[in-house]
Image (cartoon, rainbow over the protein chains, first blue to last red):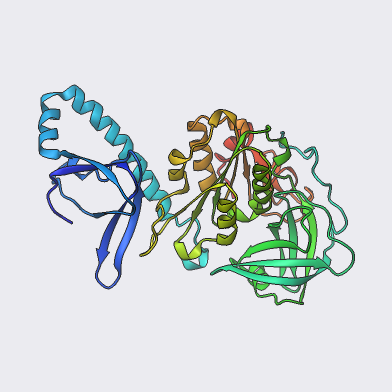
Length: 113
Length: 289
């Protein structure tokens, strides 16, 4: 956690959880991603730093791409860079919307809030 | 189906429409931290017929009355069941009602899940959140039985708060064993939980139903249903094939008092089950109580 990203993992098959560890609380599972989904987007923007842990919850086949190399290539080819970042933006917007909805604690009891 | 009172096949309100009939609590099952299922039998005679998704007005005498969906299957032997979530004074009293005590019942009221109108062999996708599984429990039992008899595939996608608050876990497991595709996701994971964590719509991409030939039912918090219905439409499901269950402040149950008015609908009479396409899609945009 909080290491500079050198590789971008993407789950080709299987489920991966994104987690964070808290002293005295163990690990908190933030969400899970499945087949065909990018595990983390932090490689795309400075400071290029991992913020969370990733854990395979079942046998996982993953693809990892060198992030330094990919960013350099995308910089050399802005059309490809734009297309890829547009797709990544779609993923990020989806995750942001999901995170906002989950903050509502829709299934919680009002008296718990 | 149209969102009017003329829903074909819906049992009309019978005795006990305006004054509560006394029912005895014959069973009481704790489903989760704040959900209790009550099994009820009338003091006299047999309970009235009802359809999947209809509701009764339950009275905790001396406290108040509240609309609760029937969570057992029509025609099933034994008492009728209602799953109650302890969220306020009346539901708190109902949840604490012991076996042998008496509660009041008016109904059944409202529209129903029209499982009989589903095209033969079509897939059925049921998207539920939390206690929203209760009004679909009976329908799912029917659908899973039909699947066993060669009917269309059944997909159950359930969103729950956390692994220790998964409601009707035994039913979910039984439906899975019976051939239904059952997936459960939780909002908050926990150590030991190996299933998905996230919103219920995140289960849709991995659900192999045929969107061109399917019916979908959604029940749960209205925000969840809005996202679920949109995700189903994005997946290619015809909005007219999606049904949702609305919840408003039902009081009279027969469309007289107006407390449950939502746009042109009186939800107690014209709902709770309404089509998404052409009805709920617009109502979900209403900004009101």
